[in-house]
Image: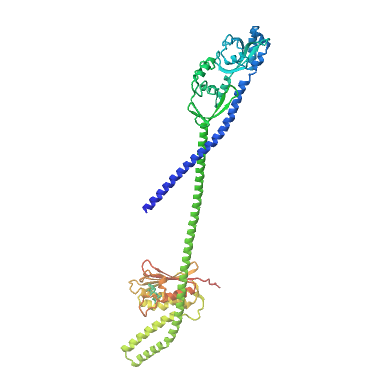
Length: 578
Ligand code: ADP
């Protein structure tokens, strides 16, 4: 038993653990699936954002790329290149720079010395500065079109430089015209958005970045020769170009200074640059976790709802089965009651059958024995008269026996059913006085006091007077032997009506009913009387007679001892003609 319950306990624990492991497994699978889906959608979003940023960078870089070439054709520029009207050119450059939103427009002689500049009036003017070391100058001075990214040697502001050669009327290269585009507004715009972008050049140096801390750092190591070259071009001014904490070992993602990002890298059409768009990788994890939690809440709610509805269904079924049970129990009880009623009816039938047989027997026996017994009585009287002497012992004995036989036949006659019973209105008072008169002698002989209280003198019933008398006589006679051993011998008869019935009760101070029910007492041949004195049929017959009259008999034990028998009969309405 204990072993069995322990096994059940282990099984339950195993099931619970299994469920937990399964739930964790499902949650993890869902987490990974959601991560894949969200990574994909985040990558798609990052790609489209990267394309957008690349366009804005390319726009910024190409916006003014033709300006140096156009200005190099300008006659005023050519004149200034050969040393004429340079001051006017300064003003002209300033106006063009303002209109075209260029940071600076300037003219350098063949050695790189700036001879005219749009920022001629500024403190940090290019005028008088030599930019002969810049690659864009070198390219243009060699007759080509130069372009170059660099931190301004004078302003320390990063910018994109374009340069074109200027030829005199003899087609001789006499100067170089350069335009600088300011790239700071671009990065400032990035800075204000919450997106992370950086642009690296062909050396892997970050030239533009949304995060100022990332600028002028390297994504991959630079060798010493290249560093030396960059230093000579003064491309990054005084910047030492340290390495950026940049880890691209994981696919699609990059770790920058410890932070993880989704990376989309797109080439830019200038200078071998690359744009890196860094998408939010944490958001993917947050979305995946949110999905798992939502799914868990959904599943838990669904499970709870299922349990709730199931238990409600079960409760209803239980209630229905309980109601069925109660109905069934009631049906069983009803059936048992019906069986009991049937048994009673059967036994009553049996009793009625017995009584009917007995009635016939009694009628024939009293008829057959009546003649011989009265003949014997006559012989004995004749013998007594003939001898004139007091009766001898034998005659006296025979007389006693004849008396006893008469007694028995009298009782038997009582049971004999009269042939034609006529039912008619019978006054209960008359039945009562007749019955008392018939029994008075016996009652007085037994020293019994009798009292009559007739509270319904006019009570009338429909019936057979003699038969009803028979009943009452039987009740009065029964009281006599019951009080045989009583000190107080009192017999009280009471007549009263209750609703539409008349009740005649006979109460004695005898030995009582000894816990016997009326059913037992009215059982044919149930008697406590000595042989020859009673046959145990009086109450059975009385009950049958009352039943014939639609009445009934009750018996009860009195509180102060003794028994009370009550015959109850329905009253009839007598029309009063007076
Ligand atoms: P019998 O009088 O011939 O015995 P009954 O049918 O009249 O037959 O009575 C059956 C039994 O009921 C009696 O033997 C007696 O034990 C009991 N009985 C009847 N009337 C009384 C009574 N008034 N007090 C006590 N017992 C009674």
